[in-house]
Amino acid sequence: MATVILPRNDPARHGFLTRVEETGSYDESAGQLCITKETLNNVREFNPVFEKPLTSLSSSESERSREYKESSDAFDIMTMYMQDTWESARRKARRLDLPAQMLTYYQLPMDGKSPYPTRYEAWYVTCQKMIEGAEEAVKEGYPPVTEPTVEELREVYEKARKERKDVAIYDSRLDETQEKLEELREKADELISDVMAELRFFLRKTDDASRNRIMKRYGVEFKYLQGETEEETPEAEVE
Image (cartoon, rainbow, N blue to C red; front, top):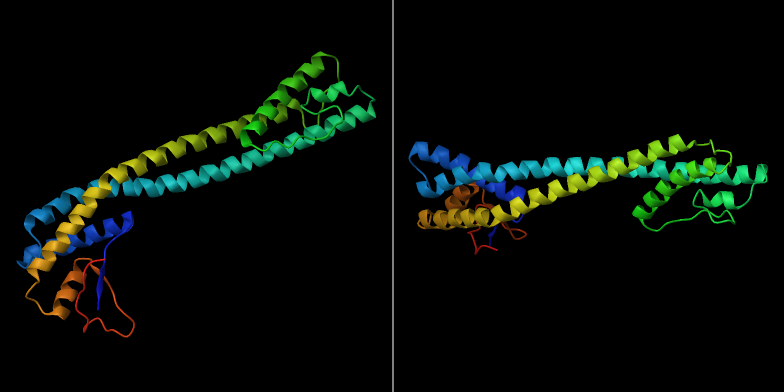
């Protein structure tokens, strides 16, 4: 027996209501509307309001995905520069027989082993301290590390920081859009329920095959058991 499948996500809800609006408008002009004019007008008023954050959500998700990719790339470049700076500092200390104390300016322990922070934020903090330490080391008379230079390290650090802030901005925008959709979802489900109830009432005396065909014109989807044909299966209760 055919079972009605109600929309369970926002694009499906919008698609259903759009189909109701399109079919209802056509049937209204032909004098064969299968739902009340009040419900059709409610759908017409609500659907554009529902569509706006839905469209915004798709755009926000795309932008957020792009920002995450850019942030990840900038972070990887920053950590590569940090690793190169550590290697250059170790080589300079060995080559020039400098005191191990020199390494500490670059956030290295005196044994020269590279740190491996386990949190993203710790990497940013460490990089900032490396930049400050490199400048302080030169003031204390140590030769500068030039592969990369402190200016190059600062440049990739600032870019990585900026990209990470951009991610937070787009996360907030996405949250706002999702909250807006959540507020509208209950109204969308209420309208869908009204449409279904009115279709059932208006088509209560129609034969099963014709009823299902008309309901499909209004965007209703059916699930059929294996072996059943659409023409022969009457509608069951809504899932």
